[in-house]
Amino acid sequence: MLYSTIKKTLLAFLFNGTLVGIVTAQSVFDPVVSINGAVITEYELDQRVRFNHFLEQTGKNIGKARDDLINDRLKVSAGRRAGIELGQDNLKQSMVDFANNSSRSLEELLSLIAQNGVDAQTFRDFVESGVIWRELVRSQFAGRGVPSEAEIDRATASVGPEGGLRVLMSEIVISASPQQVVAAKRLADKLSKITSITEFSQKATEFSVAPTRVNGGKLEWTTLNDLPAALAPIVAALRPGQVTPPLNIPNAIVLLQLRAVEETTAAAKILVKIEYAFLSGPTTSVQIAAKNSDTCDDLYGLVKSKPELSLTIQSQKPSDLKRDKAARIALLDKDEKSILPIAEANTSDMVMLCKRVYAISENVSRAEIIQNLRLARLNSLADGYLAELRANADIVDY
Image (tube, rainbow, N blue to C red; front, side, top):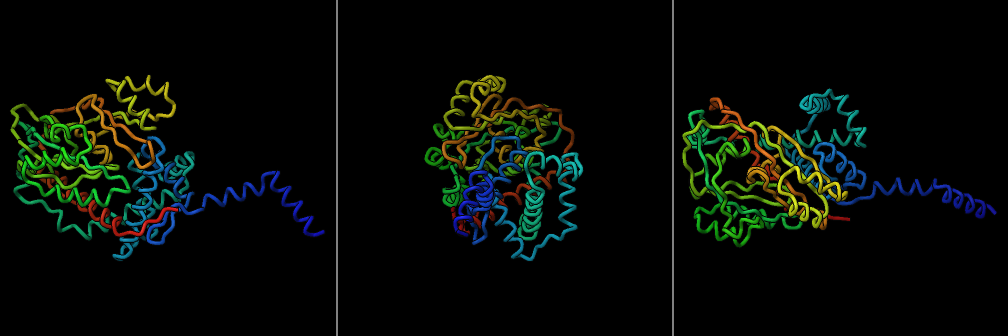
């Protein structure tokens, strides 16, 4: 009799949705991936997708969110092994600083992300991993980020108001999906040591996934000031034949080789704003949109008939651009496009350069140039260190 009563009660719960709600609620805490035994849950993944969407205003990319969470776990773990801990007061101040950088108070930012379905703990974890990683990179590589006097002199000569430099480069873009990243990093490290222009061209034909592979990766002349602020001093410090350190962008690694350089007599222009379009969605739809668009304005009409596509057109200062987008945009002329597959199956994103806005440059201080060179080198060392941590990690999907 008691069993029958319990059974009837359970059935009643099932029909009115109470137990179904409980089971569903529990499922969001199921593990989706573990990193060296530390689990990431379905809830954490969903939160990061929402948070990334809030930060970048792009399509909801599950693959990128998964990679970001894995990287954050590795960063925090490496930092704590090195004895780096972030106290509550420092963490709170870092959260305040992050909010202030977007011209908001912390309370305003937390309210805004809550409206987008993001929990305050998700934001807290994001800030904590970033600060711990920054401190770890500084402690590990500070001594290796100092540029030589010759590098500083070459970079200084390229940005004066009396003139500037334009450079002739070649590129190799190596596919680096999560399944390929270890092998891609090894290949990129090997190719970055090339000093022969002919050999680099041959390797571009063999390994690059960029359209330029058909002509050995060769790019057209570009002024140094068209490059992102973080990339320009690296290129300026190269001699013909030398190759940049591997530059990491989503699902790819980029190498640039300097083929030639020449001075320009016109007053150097400084890049003050970049307008670009970012499109994401199913690969076939992205490819069709790319084929049928000649300018950024064309994309508005195309997206209206394809609701599966997500489009944003933004105008930003070069310093505000995320490094992965800046590296892709740097290689584009007006109305050119860059399409890359992303981690999710049959999904791609496209960046299209709408226009660059310039002003005549003033004198750039030697201290600013040294700082840009130092930061660029530290970023490269940090990217390599993170790739090494991922290569050595035990990452298990559920």
